[in-house]
Length: 129
Image (cartoon, rainbow, N blue to C red; front, top):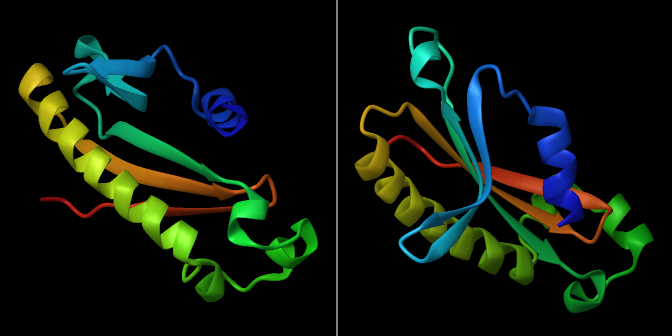
């Protein structure tokens, strides 16, 4: 929840977007959707879908110091991060399809953000389908 709150605080823009946290999509919930307002669709702004995942340091078997010092490539190879990225990508693909059906002409950018404790964050941007 803290990670999502930080992203909401940084990305919040209700002039361009309809912002939804825990948006219901077929009885499931997308973590954060930012859908361009109908009257703002003329610009080059993208619709955004973000799925957040959190891994406790204890579950990854490391301390805060170890997490901070870990190189990016090693961070992405941690089994818990790999699993959460894969799960998040599946969810984002499903949610993205449902959002496209609901809204129609979206220019949707999909992201998975995985936090390792509060020390590290890594993300993945899904490619256009």
